[in-house]
Image (cartoon, rainbow, N blue to C red; front, side, top):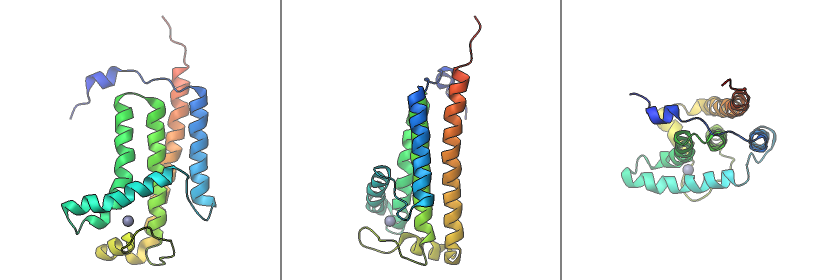
Length: 180
Ligand SMILES: [Zn+2]
């Protein structure tokens, strides 16, 4: 598939210094909350994730009751991806980077839930079973829950780091004097 030539030519919108600094602080805050606090909860961002997660189960459940257990995770990943796609198409750099950070936070959040599949110590919202106990049991990998969850958290960490790297690289490139 070929890339859309219009999108290809459109230059990225500049990221003001304040936005770049703010997004970097957001990334640092997300990582701090997930790796250095017991709650591992990012205010507002994880409230949005929780709402999407809880909506995802019944919506995917309409398609297939057997797939309903995946719905929470699917929605938690899908919505930041849709935002990222929207901002990518519009070449809105700050929005794109913010969407990546949201996706990274979601992955850190999912990884934490995965790691809890056998221990089941996290407080669950709503009724029903622990998603990952059910999913990992179906896949026959329940004994590896902590390792898989750590892998998911590692990917989230990498994505957050990438977003911050991308922001500052874009600023540096935008700041390069252009010869006329
Ligand atoms: Zn769930």
